[in-house]
Length: 61
Image: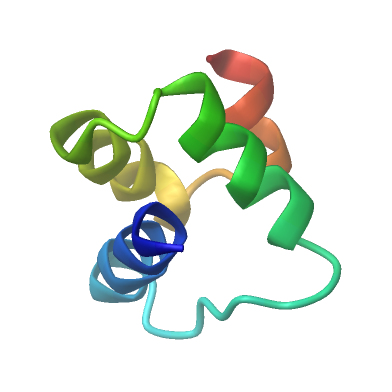
């Protein structure tokens, strides 16, 4: 999915250790769904990856 790929790319820019894993893939999918696949919104959400987990980001949305 392009939205998930965008999220992961941006998240790794702010948190180099970030990786898509079985443990966080559902939360990332949820983030992208909640943001309706809007690229700018996904990039802004991913920017929080250095301080919040994908689950926490999804909960904040």
